[in-house]
Image (cartoon, rainbow, N blue to C red):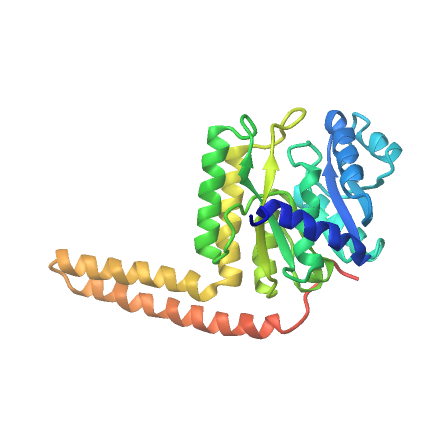
Amino acid sequence: MEPQPRIRSLEKAVTAKCSGTRIAIVIPALNEREAMGKVLDGVKNVMDGYECRVLVVDGHSIDGTDEIARKMGAKVIYQRGRGYGDALKTGFFHARKRLDAEVIVMMDADFTYDPKDIPELVTPILKDEADFVVGNRFAGLQKGAMSLVNRVGNRLLSLVAKLALRLNVYDTQSGMRAFRSKLLDSMDLVTGGMPFALEMLAEARSAGARIREMPVSYRPRVGKTKLNPIKDGGRIIGITFRLMFDTQPLLFFGGIGTVLWVLGLFLHAIASNIVFPFLIMIGAIPFFIFGLVISMIKRLGRSRPRKLWKS
């Protein structure tokens, strides 16, 4: 009988332990006293045998989250700015420059993600099969972990991002990932809020990273949620178009030009005045030209190294 996929994956994880690769687990946290101990206990148990450091980026919690993390052996630093993306960027900088980590894992502090999935995320990287691995929550979604509104919204946002940015990822909003730290030298990460997760993927793709998706468990969070589905969803849609402009300018401007061209043809078919539809169709041409020119400029710019932070 053939071994099950999960068993094969775990066998690879056991082999990968011997690689000696330095791993940093970055956990952004803000008032997660109830869950922090559970998260760190899980990480400690599953990462035994790996060369691993746990880095908690605290957003100035007032409930003692940072003290709990420190007592449990995690290194705690404090973010200067605000927001999910800012906390992660702070952690990534520290892991790369101060801890000299070769692989970085990110996960939330609310116990929604199971630390047991970390070895399966890092194994494709340690085996040189991937550079960036995303955890797919929908493959292991537990009852009550995500409301119907959030589930539909996440699916829709992921579909829009998948089509607009040409990402072969089904859960673009997942907060559990692993990646090679050296990718940060080729990624221009500027978003400070929740859209940061999508920006990471788009930048990794632009940097030529080998992106894979692995199933992970996702369970009901411990404590009160801080997410605002409507506001965060609107921001993610906005960042999608911004990233589409940045990474796929020909598709972005070509899409606008195509819409104008089709509109001109439609008006020409139903209107007696042929001048106005003709002008619309003519006006569509510059968008295709803009898209082509900007796409060429972007390609030249990508040959230059970009930095996540300033020296």
